[in-house]
Length: 320
Ligand SMILES: [Zn+2]
Image (cartoon, rainbow, N blue to C red; front, side, top):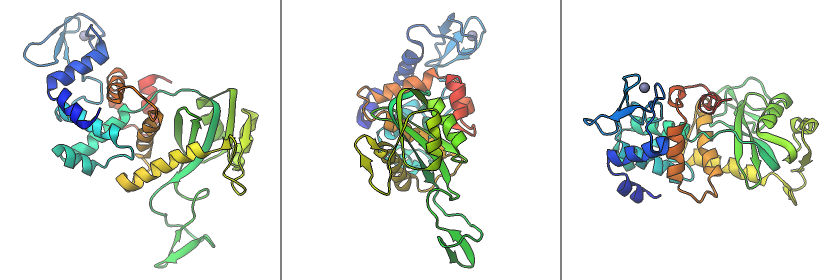
């Protein structure tokens, strides 16, 4: 849905609440505190229900990304639309200008929307490409590293790129014509990569395609692997990692264009946003509905939105 359609269809709190209630509960309202179905509507407030079992009152927003936000729901829906429709991401500043809310609100809502975009882990199969990428705007101060470094103002700044730098490394796996999964990895060791591979890939009927990085070679103990030699060519029939490289460049363009710099702590949340966008690239349904359904059916995500890792959030939302 485009922003105009959203602003027409969800222009009142009542309409937004009705939509969320339908997605979360269908026809029978369930108390989020005690799971009882015995409740009644409270007439004085739109969307409030009173539970006859535990005597508490609640709305559909309890335990969701919308909880305890003072931003009116129609504006929430419009921001969701903006985020979903922005292929390369959208800066909080731009949300502020479009919606007419404060920068702080725009940032906070966008961050919660990213949490709502977390998808359950699925197993990849078929042809799976695995590759890594490095994130981080500024080169960090380093001591004595020859050749690739340059001295600025008496301090040595590393200009090294890629493997062996201080940037944040992220490993990614994508199934051809399927989903992508990423993981921030402190060290790109065989052990870490293997754990990720086992978590996300089913090894039967699958083949892994990687470049010649040593740690990937060792994954052959687990899965069949084809290797592309980048010094010779970038693709040889099905043997290429162009899909995952396309994904990396989409994120990098997005971060460069819309987000400028992202801290290491919050990088996983931006990765989630770009994973969602990549995984919905061929989605023909209503993306707003798909998003809202997740946002209200996977409870308690909100409580953990300040968690250190998206994996933690995922475990709470979807189980291990
Ligand atoms: Zn109850």
